[in-house]
Amino acid sequence: MILKNLPRDFIWGTATAAHQVEGNNTNSDFWHLEHTKDTTFAEPSGIACDQWNKYEEDIDIMADHSIQAYRLSVEWARIEISEGQFSQEAIDHYKKVLDYCRKKGLKTCVTFQHFTSPLWFTARGGWENQDNVDLFVRYSEKVSKELDDYMDTVCTINEANLTSCFAHSFPSYPEGGMKTIMPFVSEAAKSCGSNLENFGPFLFGHPFKIRDCMMEAHVKSFSVIKGNLNKNQPVGITLSIMDYQCIDGGEAMRDKAHAESVDICLDQVKNDDFIGIQTYTRHTYGPEGILKPNTNESTMLVMGYEYYPESLENVLRYVAPKINCPMIVTENGIGTDDDEQRISYVKTALEGLQRCIDDGLDIRGYYYWSFLDNFEWLYGYKPRFGLIEVDRETLVRKSKKSLKFYQEIIEKSS
Image (cartoon, rainbow, N blue to C red; front, top):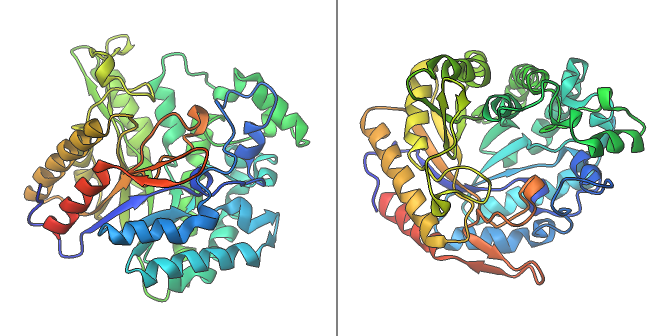
């Protein structure tokens, strides 16, 4: 497979998030939630993929397979271990990781917040409390000053709109967020000296309060970060964007989902340096709400959604006329045990991306999610998104056929 007419600066990459791959992120809110009695997490993250120690091995594999860029996150809970107390040891570790990427010829795309936050932050309202926005801005200022010379691209927040997407994806989604129907979250709040009302972890809290708080944090931190970057590196945010479709009678519900989970965010960031597009599947609305996919077991994936790689093209075409900046596909991929299915998914998605480029859409890169089979939040280690298999006992990395397939696309298309 060859992609043609790509922009000269088009970048081929892959991605991970710190909590999902590094291991032993003990100061984070998610670690606390994973270890609370009666948690709904399938299993704790534990050692994850031990990338904290194995980063050189992973970056070597990327470089050896022609991957051009690594999108990774730095872990706020490691960097700001208590309010206002920053760990130079953690910052220096990330400098080593990013410097090793540069030595191996990889560009870096650094996400400052990918789902997890310090427990101290979440215990005082987290992402439901707009008074906490300035805490993220302060953290962003510190990280951008320290890592300036090591970063090629910056993402402030990963999928700031995701919880609002959930509110439109599940018919019975509670108004106050999942924490209101998950007793273990209340227990987690109490055990760290907080209470359910003032405990605001991402994924579990009030969907629209979290969206608004995160978007404000991005807007405020954008100019602060830009002011600290000596090379004028591009700064943006990533958004989770479902391919919302409808049948007759479902137009109003589809349009409301777009308005409240996508458009309200695009309006605030349409003049950024770029927008990160993250999409995996579609949701189809009927007059009564989301329809159950008309599909069989082979096309219903382990994460509970439909195999639908065409979503990438549809989302890119939806977003493009609403913004004044380039798009980067910062996440796209599939969780499956069938690597041939993964290859088919990527091939179809990239064929759609090619049609978008042929039609003049400004797309500057594609990052496959994920580089490694890793910790998939509430689902634990069962969903396998990786180009690399990770033995859960030995942590030995094993390349999949899809990695070679992706390498060939990069080499033929670059």
